[in-house]
Amino acid sequence: MSPERPKLIFLVTEDWYFCSHRLPMARAARDSGFDVAVATRVSAHGEAIRAEGFGLHPLRWKRRAVGPLATLAAIAEIRRLYRRERPLIVHHVALKPALLGGIAARLAGVPIVVGMVTGMGYLGGSDRPAARLLGRLARWIAPMALFGRRGRVIVQNEEDRQALAVICPGKAARIVLIPGSGVDLTRFTPAPEPAAPPVTVAYAGRMIAIKGVGVLVAAQQRARQQGVDLRLVLAGDSDDENPSAIARATLQRWATLPGVTWLGRRDDVRDVWRDAHIAALASLGGEGVPKSLLEAAAMARPIVASDIAGVRSIAQHQVNALLVPPGDEAALAEALTTLARDAALRARLGAAGRKRVEQGFSDEAIAAATRTLYRELLREVGR
Image (cartoon, rainbow, N blue to C red; front, top):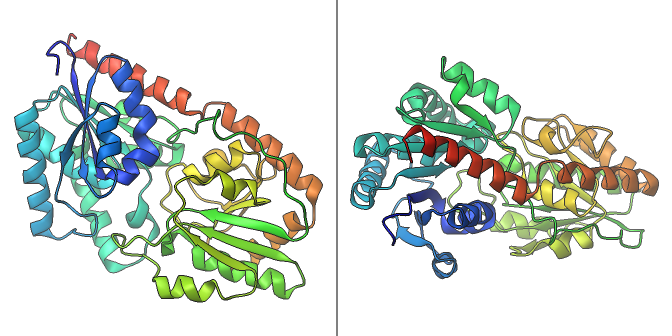
């Protein structure tokens, strides 16, 4: 690598997540003159990362491992990596990398640290005792781990910005709002609605409980019992590393219910949205800005979703979406029924969704905002 090019390392838990959510951002950094590398647990996407010209540093950590010994081992491994590679900037993506990587970066003397809090995830959406304990620990160490001598913390929605400012008093000026992962508007383009009836609602994402998949299945079944010919497509696999993973046996049982199809993992979800009339996300909380809703809106699909932080960034009630209280099966069924019976409303909301994505949610806009942030930080260290 050329010594004249500043070195930037992205720290991400999983290689698949980097490829699905952060590849445009990393490409923009590379094309702006950075030597880019990725530190992550490598499963199936290592060669894809190398093919982009990025360095790759495999890590042994696992998202499920949250005990004291596993946490200390992860911090030590990341610290060794940073001391060896001596990056100018590290970019920590999601809460766990931001916290553990932030501590490691301070110990290793990394000049610039960028943390990205992409929603609170399991900590923000679960009532389990372990999640509540982890949430308290995260709030305690956040001011030290996230904010070093220099650097910024990126959040994806205004609610998270305000919450982080409360947890970390005096740091509000160093919290930057960049709304989401972005969507490629040249790949995700408006698609004509398929013939109806039946009307198909789709969910694309991980099959984990905090995404409200069970609530969505129950709402779809309730709508059918009320005489609505509503089909449900679930596109995604379970996530064994997530504490709220839905068992495959449960997913297989749901797929035997009337009108329910479980497709499993789909690397390209455009066909899912082309074949659907409605995009749904019944999340119980902990969202940044859901990428699945960005992609569905870009393809002019109306949205039915939970009225929660993060979702509201892209889904506006009665503009491009119908929003309902999280966990409210009856309200969700009513909203799905309303859209299933009104093609004109679906068309209006879908068209408005495409316009909304074009107004600041493209991957180009997100990459440009991140490049601006990097340049600002480089000026602070005289580069």
